[in-house]
Image 1: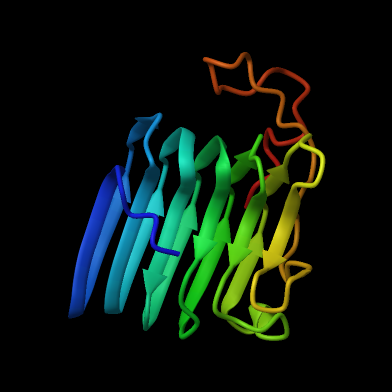
Image 2: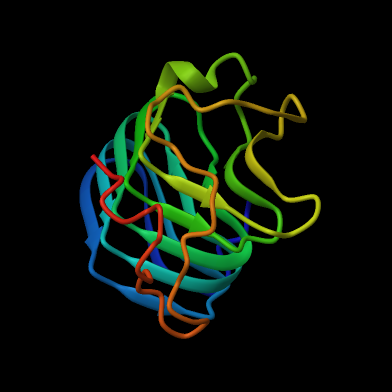
Length: 178
């Protein structure tokens, strides 16, 4: 997917090996929240709040190596997390992907039988009330897939409000992570 326009954080080192950490950002109303592209390396995206990205909350195009997406909250927008490449290990852990228009976790260039081989998805809350929205989806096969990890939820995280993304008392997402 080429929706790099208006990315709040855009990291691009095509042809290089990288070691990037993107953490502790608050991103509101961007085209894409965080976008990264490299041939190989290690990418860590953690403790970010991304609200109302027009296209994608996190656009992941790491071709080789490992990416860890953890402890992020992504609310609103079309797609919370989009995986654009197939050859690197991905760990999605302790995230809240909520109120998205289309898809929580979307894979573009993999067949649906490969998701469990590189995507390790545990202790995430992937939720939307939007009719027709999908939690986990492979575009190549045009079908849903089931995450291979443990502790995943698909429930309203109970944010304090549309402006305050802290969790209210009684939220099933409180203390449900790893």
